[in-house]
Length: 183
Length: 197
Image (cartoon, rainbow over all chains, first blue to last red; front, side, top):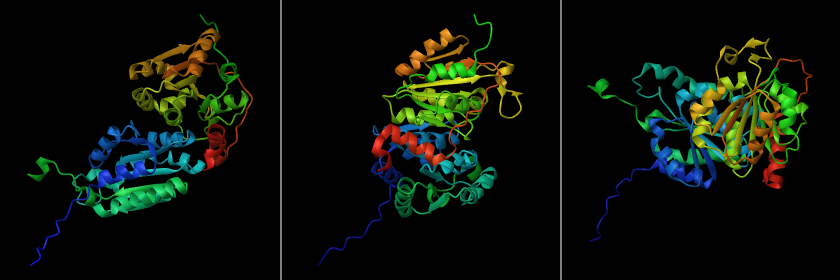
């Protein structure tokens, strides 16, 4: 009798998949304002000698940095949390006025089981405000959606000269909880 | 010791003469007009907006082209809006990047309101505190000549120079406004045919 092997679901390592995809697209400058959801990806980019990870003091610096990277013949990406989108709005004019490719990967707060009311207004405004700026918005709410969304976004940005945001949903990342809140 | 303030157009002309393959980001407003008056060039990227972003655009170029010198020429108001970027630049230690702040202590495009530098905020000290390799206040053409040498060598930065300039009336010299044109001419001059692959 044949032994039946039970299929064991393997957790998808989506931060590693994003990193791999950025490498495949020859991304050289990784600008970021940290978020817990981006922690592993940021570590992978810092450890990768083919990339320069650039910590920012505010998110709009990243729009300017990746625009400069393109002028210099290199590709960049901007990693941030949803709250950072609000900081970027005017600087998006730079990317739009010049048709700079712009790839943003945004970890979402304020949309799925959020406990912090101060995260909700910007979290809810991310998609509509990006769309007001004619940014193409892609979403990933499950692990298997992440890599295809980042790949599709990278193509739209670097091959199509678009502004692109890939939103990593709070449902994917898990809603943050502090001990004192849970207790 | 300087007895009178430097003229902004003399400063930019001195910085941009015989510029070779120097890459320049010009901050919005008067610095962009000054750079244009010194001679429009495909390797100048003049800004018509993006206030506060000039240094970060320069950093992106500098990190992409480590063997070539990058100069950001901007105003005190623009620099003050992106003060945090001085920290971001310093952390990356781009040896090939220099910043010249043409500091007239006023917002020249909006009615000559005073900026923080008129009240003593010292951008050079901020840059030093951030970790710039050098940062100084330039008040004479002799000091500017020393700065020019370091800017073009592009090996010992990041440097920041606050050049104190007057508020003399200057003619308007507008660079092209079309963003894709400014982007493409820069990339073509730098990368040749690869710019469009």
